[in-house]
Length: 354
Ligand code: KG4
Ligand code: ZN
Image (cartoon, rainbow, N blue to C red; front, side, top):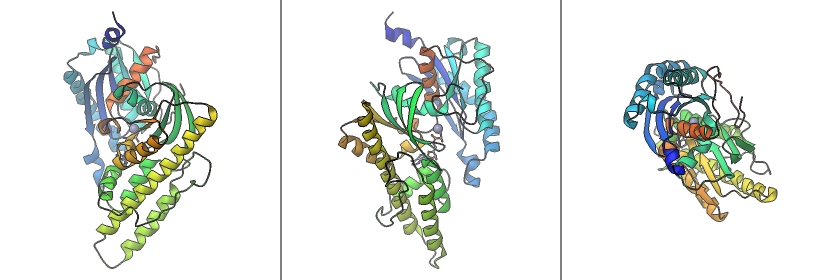
């Protein structure tokens, strides 16, 4: 049997429920995504302009059965054909995490197959190894999601050297908050990106906190406050069509965020050179990696740094079951299974087993 035949026999069901997407997917050991089903709760949270944890948990409970069943049907596989089941066990909104983790444990018990406890952030960090060829360790990673903003060197599937992180908001959170200030609707990140397309990115100069320092840490709260002050001033004006101003704020804000990320990633390249680490690729992952403007600014940086740039396809940047299944495969291959008393957790730092 060849290595690829052996890997192809591996079929892992991944279950995700840590925020506002109920998702499940079946992925094979040789990187085939056999199914990828996502039920988005956007319509349930829209009226509140953000995710309501209690509503999210109830909705996961209502939909998880159907979503998992559809993932198995689409893949043409029964639970008896699975090698293992992987479930997000944190970090995230604990009510939802409990729903998905418990469902994954129940499936593993019913099918008598191993259960794999997956860290949601690690799954984002590893997705690019599913979607792109030859992503070897170590690689440089910018992880930018709704809950996290970190720069790390990924030494192995479970060894993450965090070299920079946010001191306050995450990037995704700052997109969501600015979108809320401008009454753009929910979910904020992608809507703000759309508005920015019609805006003048040079119109407003916003601060870039911590960008005069040799630190890879981030801070977004000063930027957010500055947008708030400007927004209040514009909204206070008598004139009642503010659409151009809103688009210009979006474009200027997005440019500022991209410049902050580029500045910090530049420092990360320097750090790698100083410490003798030679990352074979630089990666951006997490929901914010779906932003085309940010992707292209980071791609230009990588061209200057003569380093390959890799990012998952847009559909796999935001939360999905395939990334959980893939992280499950990486753990399966190392024999890292969990027992059924593994406790779901709201916080779970990268690379820590417990
Ligand atoms: O990874 P993700 O789906 O969930 C978490 O693990 O947090 O990331 C969601 C975050 C949200 O804050 C959302 O606004 C942001 O990613 N996001 C975007 C875009 N798409 C999603 N931010 C900027 N531009 C986008 N196109
Ligand atoms: Zn996520």
